Length: 311
Image 1 (cartoon, rainbow, N blue to C red):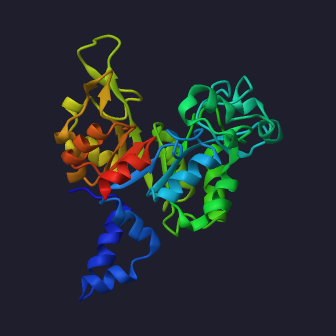
Image 2 (tube, rainbow, N blue to C red; image 1 turned 120 degrees about the horizontal axis):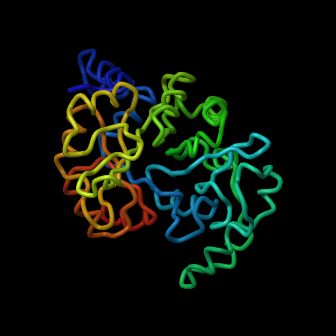
């Protein structure tokens, strides 16, 4: 079985010496984080975004309070080079502004209301406390939760955010997130992940993939960026190529209600050293189905539902 170099190092550290228990006690925080990826991880997608405005402090406060394993987020750059926690390329959907997020300074973004939209869209969950919620910086999130949380960070739209990887790695290093086993960096863009690896080879990386029907042949699945063949055609070597740089893989499981991968895909990835995380699963019955497949984690807007299944 091919294993990511960092995970292989964990294995060496864990099993060298006479007693496994002693080795476990001596594992570094980063080694322990990688070992934990073999267990099931509850990944709070943009925080508790089913209950509060996505990517706001309110959403992350809830997810952290519930005990989610990871706070999931996207980072982008403002026009003045600050890292902000925001998903879309434009600010229209989740704020009272409009236009591209990269065209605004941090001060301009901070003046926006990124909470009221949630109340308008979710009358049953509306809370006046959400009104006026500000777009977060990555620094603010780290200052709030520090090393008491783990963070699952996507380099969002790296082509629209030149310098994103450098700014992210510098911030992770400044807050000692890497060596303390506090962060995973995910991306659909392989080039972005490889750039992060060049900047700091110890950052655990997650290769995101998206399978959907080909535009030329709707009966054939393709991966969005071409990082793997179709699931039916994927080989051990394809998974091993990802395991050379990544500590795991994140994938969709369905497209328009139809499965695009199966339990065999999960086990094959795992046999080649890649824990598998599935996005974004919000219904309890689907959570249970995928737990039965042996997945290593689920992204969800409703971490509370998934944590209830864990109890």
